[in-house]
Image 1 (cartoon, rainbow, N blue to C red):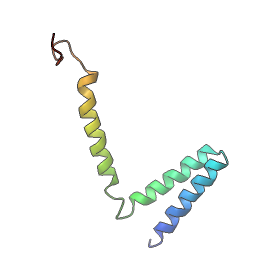
Image 2 (cartoon, rainbow, N blue to C red):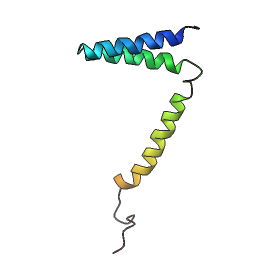
Image 3 (tube, rainbow, N blue to C red):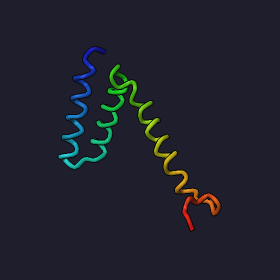
Image 4 (cartoon, rainbow, N blue to C red):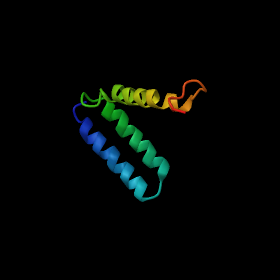
Amino acid sequence: MENVGVLIFFAVLAAFICAKARVPAGAVVFSLIALVLFVGTPVGEGLPGAVATFVGVVDDAATPALTNAPGESGAVG
């Protein structure tokens, strides 16, 4: 699959055309196809791990604010 870059380019181009023609379902489908093709390349194979790390960091930062139990507040007073 040596021409995957061309396939990604055409999928992104098709998504743009669908968006300009106000066909949101087609734009989403072509965007997902481009994303799957990108993740299949050596350059994009680290993307799922990077997204998982980012979501984990956001979860770790947001959990204390969302589960503010009565005795765990860091507020003074």
